[in-house]
Amino acid sequence: MIRAVENSELVADQQAAASQPREIRVRVLRQDAPGEESYWERFTIPYEPNMNVISVLQRIAALSKSHDGRRVAPVAWDCSCLEEVCGSCTMLINGRVRMACSSLVDNLFAESPGEIELRPMTKFPVVRDLCVDRGRLFRSLERVKAWVPVDDSYDHGPGPRISPEEQEDAYPLATCISCGCCMEACPQFNKIELGRREGETEEAFEARKQEAYDKQFLGPHAISQAMLFNGHPTGKMNADERMEALTGQGGIQMCGNAQNCVAVCPKRIPLTRSIARAGRAATVWAIKKFFDR
Image 1 (tube, rainbow, N blue to C red):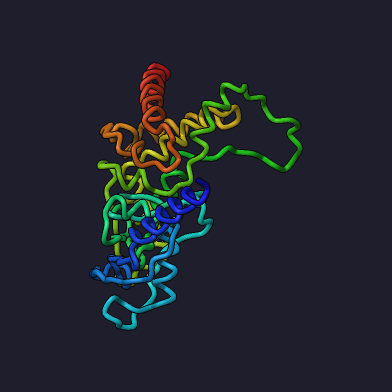
Image 2 (cartoon, rainbow, N blue to C red):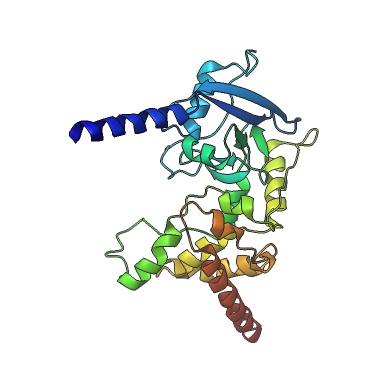
């Protein structure tokens, strides 16, 4: 009986091994520098069990050869923590925005057997290959003051108490890793790509970019973070400034309620709930502001 069970397990292992591919074919949309034309390049690497997209890119970098054997520059991409915490490895994988570190090759083959397609995010300017400039993402957080102001020049004593219910409500919003998935999926968030003018200083170029960013939609992540910090006992000190940003140009009124953001968030943050709360708060704040004039 034991031998029969062992034989059946051996057959199952052999069948699983036979069903695994021998190689991984990867198609990468590359771009050598900002503003240049993009082009597709194919790579083939040996298959290994339990690989993720980051390990695929590492094998491609070590090989530095295209599918037809040409020596090519390694593909550039961003990564840091490799455990879905830093948010830097976001890209389009098989047409869907997701984190490269948590995208397993075996699962991708189950979705689309044969080839893995990698592209940079489309809502941010490309720096090179799969690397994008996410400065606008962080500018949106600056616009809503997504932090708790603290004067650390003296001892404030114990911090304010927050009830377990409030903590439970705030924690999901605090798990945002600024990966940009929600912004990539949002139909209201459009790409802004500016080139440096002849003779323009770096400072003037950056100021022009920030001005362009400030006229466009904040994005779901910034709205959610504004609600997180407006609910914090100390963060409430800047609540009016956050509401000013949410009701100003590029604010919450630009949200089309497509709900794509919540569908792609790797942390499953209830973004639509935050946006609904922000909408109600914006209405109350605008009415109060009108009668306080």
